[in-house]
Amino acid sequence: MHRKLAVTIFFFVATQLIAQDKQNSVLSNKISVQFNNSTLPAALRQLTREANLNFSYISNIIPRDVRITYSYENVSVKDMLDDLLSRGNLYYREVQGTIIILKRIYSERTITGQVLDKTTQEPLPFANVFIDNSTLGLATDLEGRFKIDNIPDIGFNLVVSYVGYKSKSIPFNYKQEVENRNFIIEMELDSIALEEIMVIGQARRRNDREKRRLFKRFEEEFLGKSENAKECVIVNPEVLEFEVLDSLNNYRVTAEDMLYIENNALGFRIGYLLEEFIFENGTKVNIGSAQFKELEPKSRRQYRKWEEARDKAYRGSVLHFLNALIMDQLDEEGFKVNIVQYDSVTSEYTTPLNPQPLDQILQVEKTDKEYLYRLTTVGDIEVTYTREFEDDDYKKLYRSSSKSGNYKYTDKKARSSIALSENQSLTSYQVFGIDLDELDLFQKSIIFFNEKTTTINFPGQFLQPRDVTFGGWWRWGAFSDVLPLNYRPTN
Image (cartoon, rainbow, N blue to C red; front, top):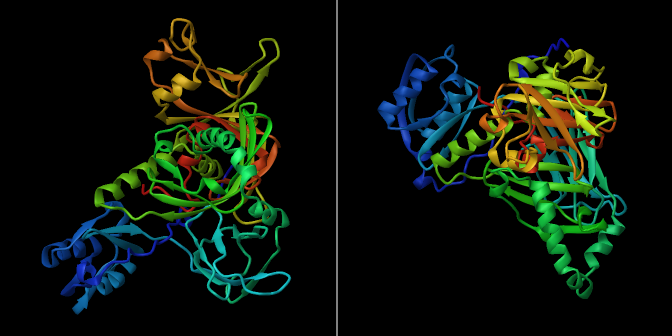
């Protein structure tokens, strides 16, 4: 699976600076400084000494081959940094007097357009327009117009939503021309949504108790059960609509408007256009589009905490796995893949002790479209991430234990079971020599393929989310561990 993808396509999207009173911001201070053939690291050290500026950055993102010879005379710190850091493809933000420097890698594609009512051709102001699963997006102005800058050089879905109208997801491929074009997006009224908005009063009050019970179950399955989930809040649960399928254990959830989630563990406020969430017989399907916006950190310490949490959430995630798979770097990134088999004698799902070679389990082929790949598998797979371990809470909930309380094992082959649904589990074997309760277990996840051939793109994403469902570790973190597709770790 040789992949001719350059690492340089990785990108960060610049976030806007925190709005601050200039009188209280170091960025408004005037400064005079001269650089003589200085490297960027040396220039930053000089500014720390001479201008008493406090910087925070990861040293390996600062290029050392850039030389600066320039004299800044009585200019604001903001103007000086805008010019200085642009030479190294960097940007910054100020948090309580500390200037945090970040890597900027992005394209210069821009998409502009207007959102209209299809029937009346009237503009729709304040419609949500965003790039799916990214930090890129905004609301239309009073004329229904929008402009989104820094579109990455990859295929993307442009999502448009407006209360009372059918949402749209418009695919753009990598080579599709978007510059110097004005896209007109016509929205159709959603009669069903309008009927739901008009439902009031007694009918809803009768179902309040049942709805609260369903919401609690949905909240746990949607957000997950990890440590990150404990710091997530669904801001507007009133937009959710619940449908009981055959009992309160099996249900379907939709949303009449954008659902907002504040993830205080990762520092994002997420607008989620929930198309459908189904929980049935212990398995779940979650279909929707997400728009990420960074929360403003209250301190330098909080910002660093978010950066560390985001990096941890990325490592071993679906996004990380698919990126590594496309780049043919599974081993280097710490992933192992095994086939999931069904044993008709024991009625158990198992994985073999000695996995087959990867190319006998799944294959990834490049299509004729840039950054679009065809993934073909012989069946469901188990993905093991060997650089992080499962939490104790996860093991207690999902790992089967023997009557003695120890995790199941047989001889020197440690055996453990991951709960897949209410009445099924997956048994895995690893060569150890000690009981499972005495050791850490690598993070294991399962991908169930409803279609054995599906499409993925780069950055890592399943383009047909209904083709797959997840179990194991990826189900544990669920939405609380999700990152925008334009996220990349710092090293």
